[in-house]
Length: 191
Ligand code: SF4
Figure 1 (cartoon, helix red, strand yellow):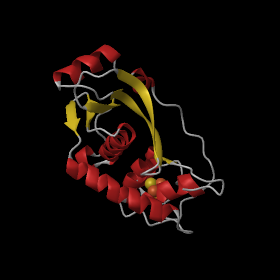
Figure 2 (tube, rainbow, N blue to C red):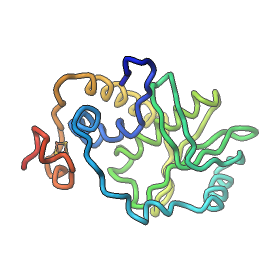
Figure 3 (tube, rainbow, N blue to C red):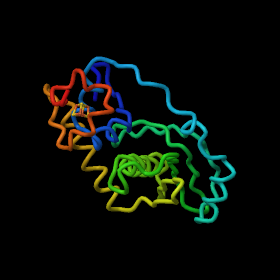
Figure 4 (tube, rainbow, N blue to C red):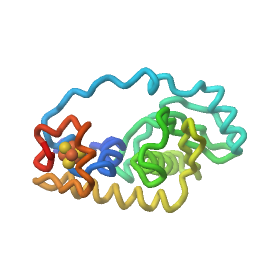
């Protein structure tokens, strides 16, 4: 995760990928660069800022809202862009991730890990208490302390796995490999 030139924060997405498949995270970091298909139109649409503002106000947040807010946290060694961030002020800050297709993997899945890391990063960057939310078509999920603790454990595991010379075992049902772009070169792929 660190280049010889110095500090080089890793993208939050690599921890999200590790949560889905540790082998995939290793291949993304250390394998050949593959081109991903473009994101679907549905994912690009996102939420209208007014919808986010209304939702956050109802949840008790009134700070200025930044879309695609860049966060870089030297404490965690991570960088990323959260979909929406309400700055802290007279009310606590908030980060919001929008998942147009629902919360992939449920509250223990990669999306929650990502949102939990963004919440911790925002707390470090702004030195203030933040709440984290995931908004989906089914409703709103809240980031809690146990999600944050799990995300930090997964970050530590991700860093250890990426530093290894060999890809870690996937540790999941190989049916996930069907849609994986690395399946042709992955040593654990069922083919
Ligand atoms: S092919 Fe399967 S085990 Fe290999 S990286 Fe992809 S999802 Fe993981």
